[in-house]
Length: 125
Image (cartoon, rainbow, N blue to C red; front, side, top):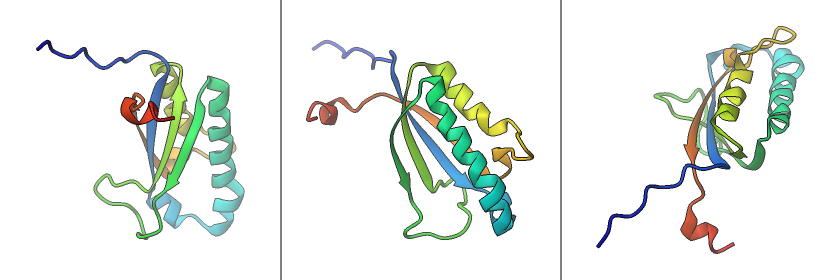
């Protein structure tokens, strides 16, 4: 019996972005959330398509939990297909860029897991 080949890490990549609101979000006023934070979040995420990222799906895990996630827990998940690793880095970096007084890493934590399609289930589609 031969050893299986290593998983393919070729483009395009699937990326799972794991997000969470931080204490900055919970301390922000309703006006800042509505007028500053959420518009900037929408702008940044909309701009990811310009980098070649394609949204697959989103999940918000707040049905059965409240408050700030602890111990690295996350509450929202974004699944994208991206052309390469640099795109992932650029997407994350967009949270560090300040525009109109809004720098998203003041209110959110975002991490990425580089993945590939899960071939047994993908074959069903």
